[in-house]
Length: 227
Image 1: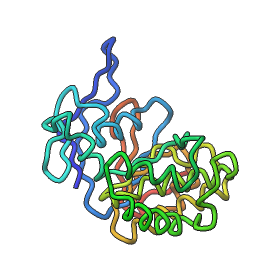
Image 2: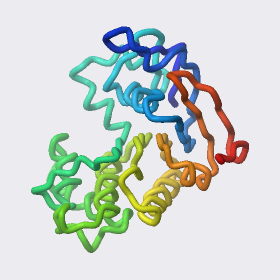
Image 3: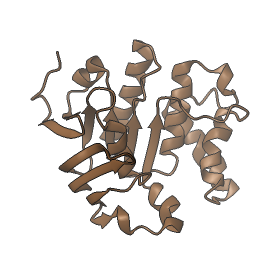
Image 4: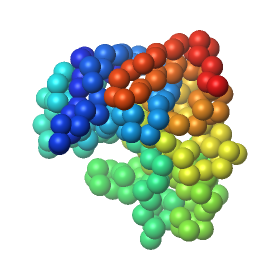
C-alpha cells in the first residue's frame, strides 16, 4: 500500500531529516514507528499524507507517487488517510458531533449523510452519549477519541497517528490503542509513531526503528521486545 523508494528529506540549512529510506507497508498492517525525539518519525508520516515531499526518491501510495499529485487534488488524496495528532486539533467552539461533522461539511457531503454517519462513528469510539459535549466538557482521553472519530469519518484506507497517546495517562493511552487495534482488525492499515515503549511492546506488531533519520531496525510481529 505504501512504499518508500530511496527517500531522503533535507530541510533548509542542509538539515537531513531522513536519509535513504526504503520500505514497504502492506495493506492491513499495523506498524509502530519508534525512535528518539528528532529522529525523523514525524517527517516520515508527513511524507505519507503529502504535507512534505521528498527531496530525493519517491513515496508511493497504491503505486501512485505522491510527487505527482496535483495540489488541487491533495484534499481528495488525503481522504484516503486519516490523521491523529498529540494535540487533538479540535475546534473548541464546536461539539463532538460538530467537530466530526466539519470534516464532512468541507467535503460538501449532504446533510442527511452527515446526520447518519457521524453518530455511527462516535458510537464506534465510545462517545455515542457525548455527541453534544464541547471539548472542555470532555476528558483528555475523550477528546482524543473525538479526534480519532474525525480521522475515521471518511472511512480511510490508512490511519496515521503521530504520538496520539503523548498527552494521555496510561489508562487512556491503552483505550486509544485498543480502538486502533479494533479498527485495524476491520482492515484499515495503521501507522503509529510513538515514544511509549510500554504501549508499542504491548501492541506486539511490526516495529520500525528510526534513528538520526535512518532505519536502524525493522522487526516483524513478536520478533522485537522493547526494554
